[in-house]
Length: 272
Image (tube, rainbow, N blue to C red; front, side, top):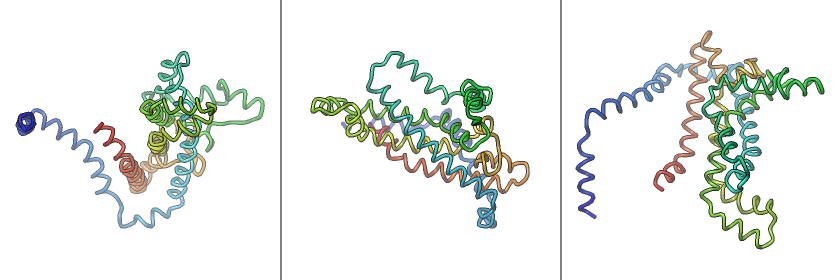
């Protein structure tokens, strides 16, 4: 064992500058914007600014819509992940591809796609408006739908990965003991996937909280109704740069908290 360790230590002891220079530049690119936020933050007026009605309103709306979107992701995504991981339904690869599209789709394009489906003249939106006079875009519910659209893939992929890593024989044993498929899912499969469900929910919540493009395209930016924190940051850039920094700091704190919550899971996955 010592004979195999020595070459590794010797190799890692020689750090080529050809790698150090771009690595340092990449690290600086990631760190400097965060440092800029912390340096330019209006710390002296922070308590008063947090109490500003516009900022408080945006915070409350963001927390409400992000939490609602996360609940929707759990309700819709957990069964969908189960179908992908534990069944042999036809077209499973195509379904997985469709699910991952919002991950790579530009958010603004996602907002346009939502308008074509749920807008007043959309595929479903027109039927709802003609039958009930119901209009989804430019409402708080529209914000929740936009956030769910962009956050759902994070939860589905996390839960699917957890289900695939869990031993399916537990499900088979429960089925042989007389449990129905719903009972197997609720009492066996779901508890086994609980870590993936928890991490997926946290990721979905963070993604929903930071959503901008699809929200502003599909729901607009109306104070108290659809103006979430990212939209408030964009709006404040033109009038109150300190307020934009403050809202950005709140989102930064949330991002760091998410990383802290998921750190152990990611490190354990990397070690495996």
